[in-house]
Length: 620
Image (tube, rainbow, N blue to C red; front, side, top):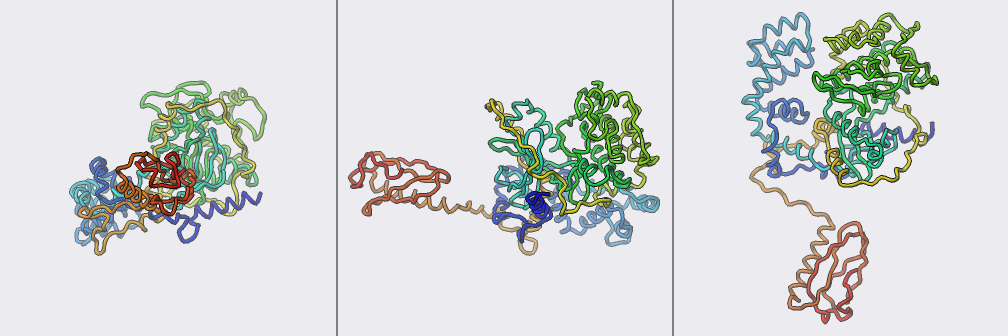
């Protein structure tokens, strides 16, 4: 390993695990960046926000926490929250009995009618689905009068303030940029850190000219919109989308553990033990299930696109070939990677979700055998030959395959998509029910509490040296115009709501900033009767205002005179050279600095400036 790579990787790993000193990687000005607007400045948002209970109080993480804080102020609502929490974890039998017992002071009235049914189900087979009716009854109760009262509380007003922060413009200055991690089809991928929170991400840069040259606008926008829509712990999340002068940027979940291809082939004997194959296959299955629930077919399942995080959990990445399938309208498209494309894709037939289950079969085979099912590692073979093998030949199974591993591979690698596992009416449920996954608890897996069999070493580097990553050549002969700007406007939409709110909570910015007044009262920024504080002015702004006042006095003193001179005042970024004025002159002098100029025109007489003619500027 080269020292630069190792050091930079350790820095990124340290930062992603919360390093960076007492401020945890946050900027010195993080509180100013995340300063709440006064509640009066949230009026327009308050009038236009969708007042949907499930969205505001369940789906949005900050909204959920604030609604719960409100419920804690009312004992009857707090009991509902306790019961809902017990249903989610479905481990605390005592909590159920307390909340469902009519004699208990903790009894939840909204769930009384379902108490006996819940108790019977709990004894027979405790799981989350058993309490669906009870959970629905609780939410039906909470979205009535409690939700209406919540919207008139300071907790909802605070939610509006968080939503205003969420809508702040996003630029390259929002982030610190670190080392290059790799390259995509349109540009580099580098590590970055949000200045306000210290959260680490991967920034996928799509060079504007390269996109235009390859006519990749639709592909880039499609990937962005799909990432924005999917919210799964098994698919990389999109947190921000913004633009710079030269690139469109997707800020994604940072996965420090490398990709499956690296782990299969570069960490000793090719392939994994069965328990590790089961764990990764189960998580991929869940990720595909979440994509399919949104009618999205992935179409590019291969080891390079499966990434590990610091804790050993995987996510599906690179959704450039994913596409939404219209209901009842199978699609056609010969896309994917040679050796992993399903027979129906190669034959250019219409398909729905079937190529993804074929891809899962290829991955399980490769993780077990240490080679792909239709081409040996580094085998030089033409595309046509590989496609012929996929269409006509049966894959071979060595003694590395147990009986159930071979069975699931054969079921997923069935040539006919109508007979393939996962493509029948049962869908993903049939895959999860296969005996290969008998040791996997999918409830715990989807909750993120199933322990992985392998955890990456934080000191190890699971990727190429930064010096080994091939550089992109300069794109020539491409000019950008207004049509391109219209596309960039659709792309650069700022932060994505749910990942942004998770970031605020995970980095403890929420707990640090979400402070109210003493004894449960409103803080000044939440007081509708108090006017907002005037915006804080920068040092430069205060200096400029003093000069403007001086110029105004000068104008008032000499308003009867007629020669026009232009005085330039200063703003950041263009260097201005100042001429010192005569000691008897009343014209103020501005010291040389890095400034941008703008002009104020006023009337002065040359007689008042004995050292200058009417054509001599006071300031250049």
